[in-house]
Image (cartoon, rainbow, N blue to C red; front, top):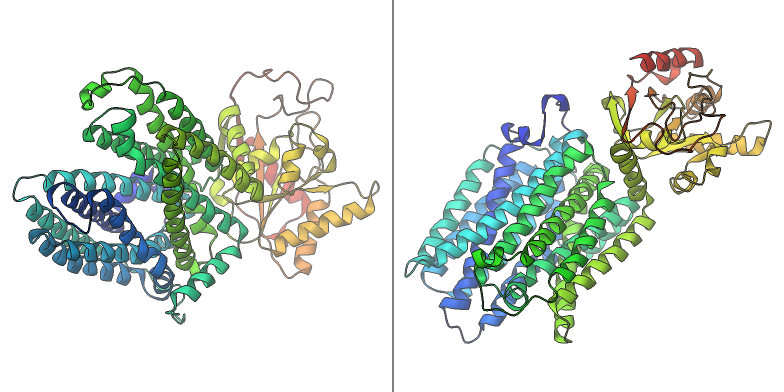
Length: 637
């Protein structure tokens, strides 16, 4: 990953001024715009302008979409191998040169009204996108730091949907020019391809992550191998399924916009285009908001929030489109002029905004958690699943329509299915739910400020040592960390009805005093040692319990025992001192005769709390007394 300090980049837009990101961004932007300019113009050509006996207008969109998706099923596995084996800059330059050749053929096809040539180019552009997809998402974590990854993915997601929108709009405008429209489309496609190849020239080198890889050219066996490889990491694989479900969900809505506009909303083709604009703007805004809400970390707590919004506004869209009176077909001005349609527009905007919040963290998580040596092949596996889910969405939506379901009813069923699928994924991977709770507590219950969070390691084992003020301490530490944290905590906390379930779900390690339960005491430290051997983060509250008066209590010997076990395992584990501030007197702390969680608003809403994180200490040189001094200093910072 990049070693450029994140503090030098105030927000994700600053990446557009840097060579490691800007040429890549504009390369993928030009490619996405060209894909959609070509496909939309071709669809309009065979639907409205040409009469082709063997390709009926009603089937044109379906055939073009199927030809474009087919290469993803056949060649994704091979493209993932190529992206892992070779320099990613070289692959991107080759793909953009390939695009120029495709568009030269496409221009000839448009000028000569050759539908077979344009169908060939459709399949070749699908191959172009298949080759570019894995290298695109594998490139980002190679050049961006963890604190930049969410913003970078947000920019790419936003750019992609803006490019799709512009491509469709420009393609529709050019092909509609009388007599010379096809020629203009051909020239536009060539110009975009050349521009993409030009900016690709400035993409910096991106070395191969597995140069010794031997390419398996059998797409079937390699596809199965990629899917098996993805399944080795449960969190990554469930995230792949989550992203594929998002594509299923989005494909249902995008494919039905023309019919929704005409049959339900009584609008013309310009209204259908407006719905696409609203959807694209929502995705773009949601994608950009991810970095703001996540505070420049990979925050997968946004995924449940996104899923909730997707379901709520899908269901509301059903109710918003029910009972609209019949009317003559109207244009955009007349459509927007009716207050009943504002709710429809708001639902589509918010639905897609939450879809952006849902997808960006998942992509960033996959990039961060996949092994660099086969990251591109994991992305390729995701592309295969995406294609299958999109095909499945077309088949299922078509089956429902064929059985008399209305378009609003399909939206309702999709929204309800989203709730079931998301709930199932979050139960299988509790980390999403844990991070969501942490996000809500740290953003909407408290005004939580973290200082020094860059000292929390993004890779490898480490011990986090923090003072203990309240029952909410683990949730706040979890919210500040870019990685999952395993907590060693007082077994009595697990009896809390408010948060005990959460800590059990997060596989926290309960520890009882040795004199009270010797076997449980030893089992807890065995579990803690395993966490560090696995290269994960372990958090301990060295005071041994929640403070009863708000002051820092003497540290006990548990931290020394953990470090001693780590040294016995041959590990020199760093210790990161941390101090939670201004939590004493809050709802979750012990005040008023030693009780906690009484009088919820005794400090008002959104009270300020903080976490100060110090520089990591070498585990071999840490002792209990010096660690307590460090934490005390952080309390005063």
